[in-house]
Length: 201
Image (cartoon, rainbow, N blue to C red):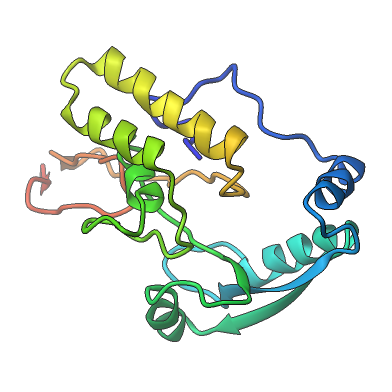
């Protein structure tokens, strides 16, 4: 979940490999050896996304190979936001979220328990008290190295122990400026403030 441009990114960490046979075995162990049906929500475009529907269709095809039958439900961006922020409903197993941020705090926004008052956009209802506690620790840790270690621990729990999210891609937000532009700050987000830049004529 932590992208390469984020301070807590661990280059030694290896996510799950593509292994349909292992996936089938895990489904059998979970008592759903014949697979199951679920709904995947996505938008058709919006907010700097790439090709959300085509990407969701690719996931749909891969999941079908192991017996998970996915129905895609697509919405225009505004409709999607209004539905998504109400949280997933029964029978809905996944939703798509694009986010433009390269700060460690990003993981707090999507992974804090939905029972917490400041749950961010955890609309998939992911909840792990251990993760909530570590997120609190990270918020209060002033030492950058110690804080980075906590975020790496959180990432490992979310991705290895819980397998709660499946990151798809990480693209770069390019910024091209004229040499005349001064005072521009490239923040760890995909939105900018424009009160510090000026033009040096």
